Length: 237
Image (tube, rainbow, N blue to C red; front, side):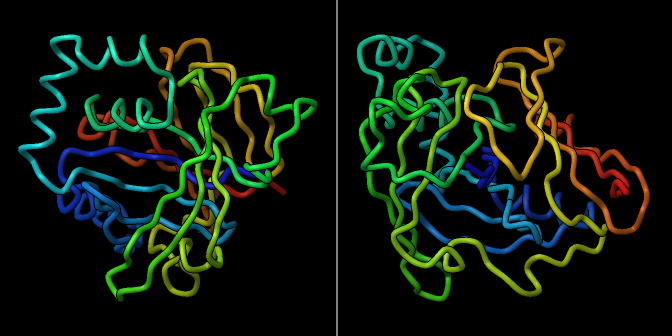
């Protein structure tokens, strides 16, 4: 099992892209998927941070309002499905809201699989249309517990979804996500990134460290704007 990407939901995609580019990240347009559009901060180790927003600011306001009056909380109580998870992204504050793993056959998870122990939603197929018109397809399943990850399986080649080449070269030297600290104890393990339970973080919070080829340590100042922490660290060894 591998960490695939982190989801950073934002109020306005253009503002977020400008912000992260000013902090030395290369941000690649992702395309549209239903009511959302996204952009990607892709690293050389096949991990990425997804910047995602609703295309309509009016829809974002409606979603925040439904959350405030308790409508979405009622839906979460009545129905645990993948749509509930996505509605939680769309209605909550901007920031790191989820993490995605890959490496399992999502349609064929057996009762003996470690993933079956956390309880999963039914598989749902998705597609995204890239700016160049290419259609990307994948399947998602989410843990019933929203503090646990969701899982992805590609139906089209993975490099359709995770760009290669210059998209992975960052002026600030970032090479890849090396550690994710979370407020919840994550049950499935991954082999490519260290995921650490940090009890000082509130439930659902995350802090990200990326390896930096320039051999400097830096804190990317994004917490005030996007309710998240990203650090650059020197490569070990």
